[in-house]
Image (cartoon, rainbow, N blue to C red; front, side, top):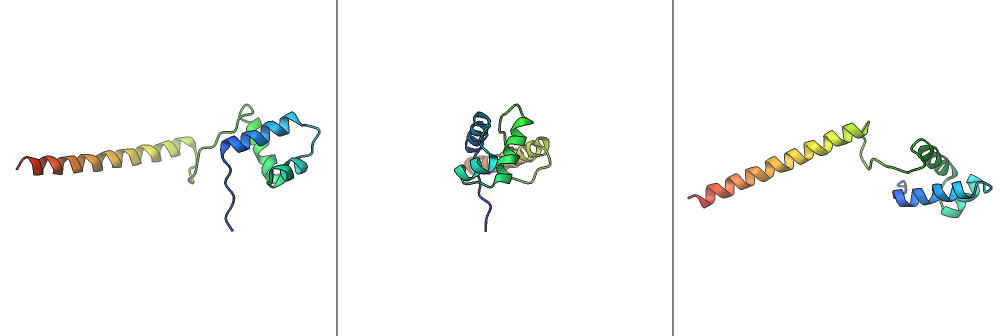
Length: 96
């Protein structure tokens, strides 16, 4: 069974709701939104460590934001190099 994926907007909404309703238990809030209570605890903890904002790095198994950025830049460089090769071949064909 695959793990459900929630977007940052949904997560932020749940965290905001929990912060606005401190009298309601986390288990009750989790049931209301259809998530596990351990998930809501994690989202609240993550938000508290980030100025009450949910921010995800996105998918991928990167050890840090820097590692993710390096991977993105490497992909961008490869795509650019591939495009350059296509252009070189096109110029070669047109030049004949």
